[in-house]
Length: 341
Ligand code: 13P
Image (tube, rainbow, N blue to C red):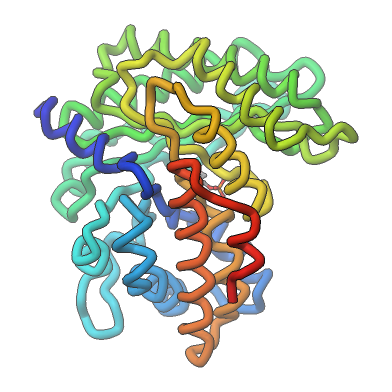
């Protein structure tokens, strides 16, 4: 393990004005996204779509610090034969890789999952590092409902995150530690904040027990936010304040940065919430984005699988990347959205 290198990579991932593009949709998830825009999910179509993102030079150079890739993508080449990893590196962004193998049902815990993928992870990390990955991602999923999450599920998922993070650091790969509390239910923002605290406390205890060096990791949490089916919507300021409070109670200041997931928020909500937190200021860590849907929904729609739409899709991606880049330093304004072409 090279701690200085880990800390340097982690700092670069959360540098001011930039954030992470989560383009690591599994084959199943990207098929769902492509179905929504009427595009067949073939390896070539997936390559063409991701290539257009990575060739969005303005967005990539100015607003994207790193890209999370999926196993297929890290091995793919652009139409002209250039490895997609090289395209990313040429923009100054850092390639990373999703290494978990997905969330599977957790025995005796109905409605809850455990993320798999620890067996053979050391060998897979060695291979991915050889392909250019300098950071990795592992997503644990915690659902909120009646009687859940259980301690069994929280503990098991936190343990797996700790095991994963230690294996990454052993090979000087920065772990993105992602415990996602879902926003699918009918719960309110306070319940989300309470569950988020419970999960984060447990995760950081596991990271400590498994000797993970906090200076060499990035946390990717959900925000404290009401469930999608909740009748009480929280304001932007309430989300920002309650998210910051939960994080301050649980995340040691030694962690260099926090890069939020968007989790099903609308594009503009995800930007506004991040911006509001950075406006409040005073946090001991950098606060930025690691968005999947909130960066890609607009370009996917604009592209719709047509070569003629590539420029429009790149423009849509560049706009969202720029808005979120501004939010990462608290300089976003709603009016900037309206002025977009
Ligand atoms: P969303 O921003 O769409 O939640 O995706 C981020 C991610 O990487 C989920 O694992």
